Amino acid sequence: MLKRLLSMQYPRFNSSLGASERPLHNVTMSCRGFLLAVGLALAMLTVSMGALYDHCIGFPRNIAGHWVHPRVKWYWTWYPPLGYPFPGIVQYVYLDEHGREIKHGPLVERGVRGNTVVLSRTGFYIEGQPDGVFTEYQTYWGTKVAETRYVHGKQVDLKMYPVPSLPARQ
Image 1 (tube, rainbow, N blue to C red):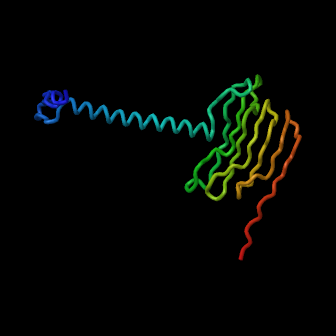
Image 2 (cartoon, rainbow, N blue to C red):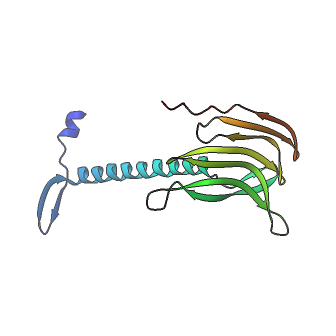
Image 3 (tube, rainbow, N blue to C red):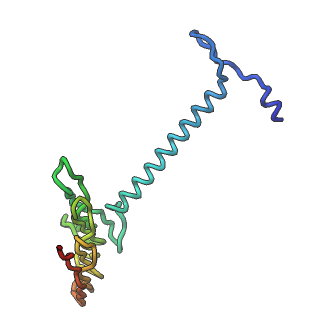
């Protein structure tokens, strides 16, 4: 069967400018392969950008019975020609019947250390009140500074952690 396929005559592409020696079948297969590779690359890029957006900011979602969307406050790492923007505060909110934004869902605050973006505070809100554990981080070392536990908006526990000291200069 392989000999029969190799001995087949493929139709030639003829144009007014001259005849091409490449079979028409091979041209369409190479175009199809190229388009498939470009399509796969674009699909992978789209999926990875969506995953990155969901990780850094988040898509609208349903949390504890409310359809919430992220409210993002953008900051710069440095002055605009040298730095880059990053989502400094990401807070999920919904609108009540009066049009006010009610905090409902995760809170993520990020800060700047040099030219890098570091985590500074995390927590969770339900119906505009803090609920669960709020963790604050020291932005220089990236270590925990405090954990505050809330139950329905009331603080029930506060745990402080030691902050590492700066290295001594010699």
